[in-house]
Length: 137
Image 1: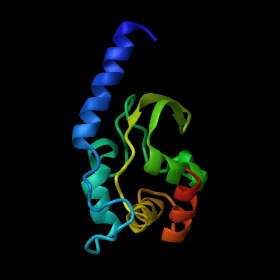
Image 2 (image 1 turned 180 degrees about the vertical axis):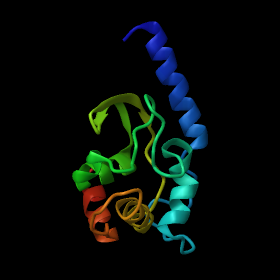
Image 3 (image 1 turned 120 degrees about the vertical axis):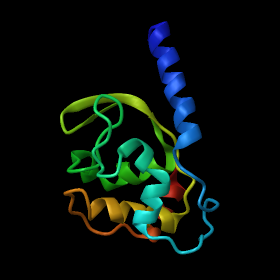
Image 4 (image 1 turned 30 degrees about the vertical axis):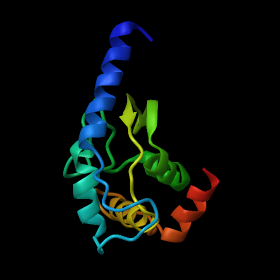
């Protein structure tokens, strides 16, 4: 990785840490009941934008996203974040997604919202599903 790429990646990471995610609760403690849409607006909208379209060349779309086909990868990315290249809908993205400080129920709610909006169709994500994966990480 050249020096400019490293500096750019570090800068994006710092910006994301400052702007993405708001800790709506501690890791496994339920917060006041928020909807998946509320959590999306607090946690995801900065990078993935209001309609899930993402930012071309920087942040991948959630709208009609082929990445959503692998539920385990989707949940893992929300829990652990991601640094590096990803291909979504045939386009390469190389950016940073920080781990989101959300409890199991919040992850389930926000992902169920994503799976049922933005032109996506997928089964609801359950808190038990998130908890089971979190215990493996």
